[in-house]
Length: 223
Figure 1 (cartoon, one colour):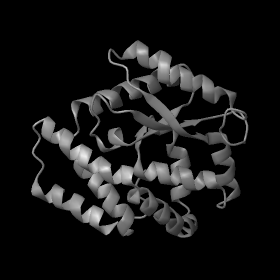
Figure 2 (cartoon, rainbow, N blue to C red):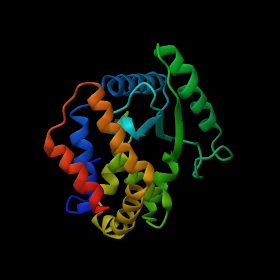
Figure 3 (cartoon, rainbow, N blue to C red):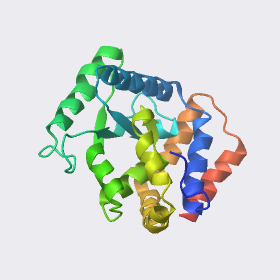
């Protein structure tokens, strides 16, 4: 999703740094992105609409063999409730299918994957049509789509277009999402990640230009 807050310094700095790291993506990050995309295609070709957003080291392109893969899953639960195990029985099915069966089938070096959130696309569509901008699902969708790495994004494009055309919506949610991103970037886990990313690139004999190292320093100092 194109950054809906192009003049917002918090989002601009985060996305700029992410794109800088992606220029030096590790072989492992590229492999995992390809394999997860292949999983999405297999499911899509079976007639089921399923998409993912990847967070963490794969999102930044700096995964190594020990990295886990955290993801958000987008699916149609067949109802308009929140996507959890009680309201969305297919969620557990697709978790098992994606995280175990298909991954083992296509990868010769399987890795740990975990679904950290799930978005019911039918509920999302209803809330967009109702212009119910108080619903948490719209905030989560915009946040994930802005900062994460998408897989099978074509399924999500209609929802993005509907939201991007509503300037009033973004005037309402920008402040709240900025606060969420600030809190996220202040966590010790997030800050430690940059040290790990730089170390992994050095281990792969990738020499980062001073400009990127300065970007990291300025970014962390600003939080």
